[in-house]
Amino acid sequence: MTKILRPLIFALVCFWLAARISISPHPEPAPLPALHLFGYRDTVEDIRKLLWPGMPLNLTSGPEDAVYGALDPGDLPALFAYWKAHRESLSFLAEAWDCDDFAREFLLLSRAWGAHEWAIPAAVMVGAAYVHLNGDYPLFPGSTDVRANHVLNVLRCSDGNWYFFEPQTSLMIPIEAPLYEGVIEVLKIQI
Image (cartoon, rainbow, N blue to C red; front, side):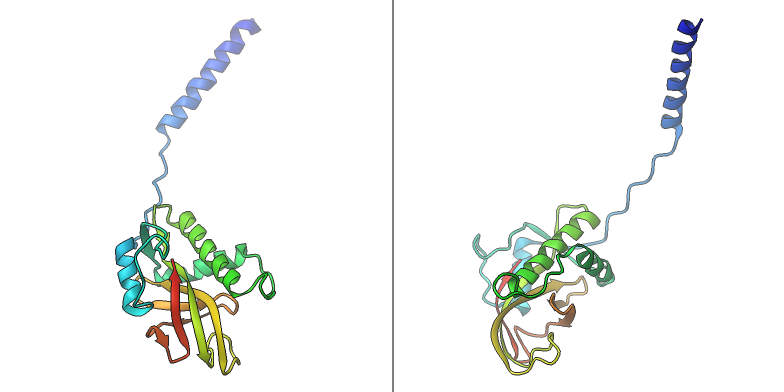
């Protein structure tokens, strides 16, 4: 008798599960974010307008991706939270873990956040800015009369504004010109 009941019960359970799966509502896919997308040529033109007027458009200078998405200003808290949760949190160590490493880490984690959040083939419009500092650097409170080369980040928001972001202090300021208040001169952008 059990030889007959076991296959019968198994068949009934399979039919019941199949019916439940086919009649249960499928979840709606998550809505795609409303992004301001830029092709690589438009990205270069946007960078040339404000950040680096002489930016070349070639394989060695970038941009490195074909499509970029400008950040919605409302997404910045989520981006920064992701970065803080996933960064190495290493202390500054000259040459081993210094400004360029902090900037590359933020760039990489920004792209990872975009891949998770947006899930579309577009890179977050964040770059590493190679700059020359000459004066009181506003993103390091208390640093006066600085004369040095430095690397920090730039990011573009969908409101059309570019920002400098200093990953060592988590401070951000809007960019007003390629030579920011006579202190930050953009030499190169890696995006």
